[in-house]
Length: 152
Length: 152
DNA sequence: TATTGTTATACTCTATAACTATA
DNA sequence: TATAGTTATAGAGTATAACAATA
Image (cartoon, rainbow over all chains, first blue to last red):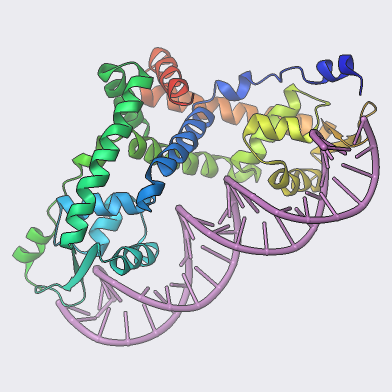
């Protein structure tokens, strides 16, 4: 192996066109962040999607599946296996809605309540890490504001 | 159907815990942005991934597959069908590398060059739209800086 | 022994259509 | 007729393992 040629061959690519693109930057950051989240939450056996459901059901007990799914941007068809998994782990519960017998009202079980407390603490640590990386609370608020402007 | 009950049932959920999360905000913005990009580039029949490959090959002709794939965060196994599709459309070309007969050097075809010019114009308009949404060039630079801090 | 391209494979997310039971 | 939940299914994107040719 010719080392000289090898070094020449390893020259950095010109990335500029992609690095400067909002779409690619956001995609890269999102994918890295999601991977970090998943590693952090692997001990709990919870995906970002399941985390979102647990959190929303915790703060909005009694809402129907479609409402929780909509708030998370998940289609109701894809929500079913998600809530099934949580129910199988006895973290959430479907109860027949008294007002509308088509729909299920979602609740946390006592085990679910306890679980949510734990993962909320983990999430708080995760968000604190993000804040540190960004350079403080102001930077974090600025990022969230900018992201929300994109998402209109 | 009881309208009063219906209206009560449609109360907004408490979203705060998720809206305030960097992970969920970035995920939502990324997914909306990707969808917008895909709609915009549907007439060209190009996915974000293919767009990235074309752009990188255009600015870095002669690089091998692994280098282009790495720069895009795509694994070399998943890069194969991607570059196959572009080659089938006669936009890119694999040439045997003279220095290393294991690797393929990637080039745009003349048709590829012309195509890249077109989609670059479309991308410029897309990015300009993002900039407008964000509130100007400074806001855009701020967002890219913040995102890059997250992706370390 | 390590690397390049490749195939095969699997798993997650997401998207759509159609069914049932209720409204 | 419209909606809630469900099923089935298909398509992206991504992940790993293994192989042949070459270094």
